[in-house]
Image 1: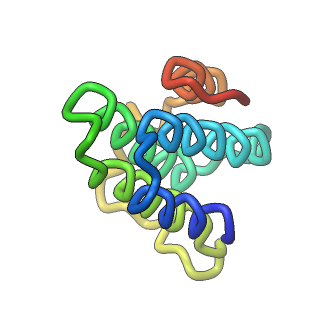
Image 2 (image 1 turned 45 degrees about the horizontal axis):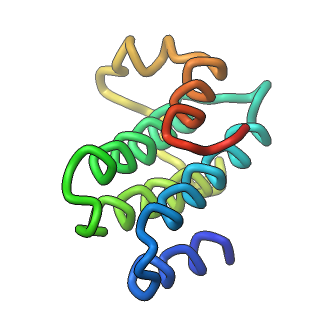
Length: 115
C-alpha cells in the first residue's frame, strides 16, 4: 500500500515525529472504518499491534521512531490477503477476540486519529 510506504519513508526523514504518528493513527482509522462490519480475529490482532506500537512511541521517547515502523509493519500484515493468512491460532486470546469496532476506534481517537 502506497500510504504505508510513504509513511515509512516519512518516519525516516520527517523531523515532525508527532505529525507522522498522527498520520499513522489516521491511516489506522481509515483501515478500521473499511472493516467496520467485517472485523476478523486477524484484523483485531494487527490493529491492536499497530495501536500498541503507536502508544509506545507516545509514552516513550518520541524521537525514537522504531515503534512507528513497528506500527506500520503491523498494518502491512493487516493487509495480507485472506487466502494467504494463517487464521489458525493455537490458543486465541479471548481479550483480542472480544474487541469491538468501537473499542478499537476509541483507541485510534485517543492517539489522535479519526475513524
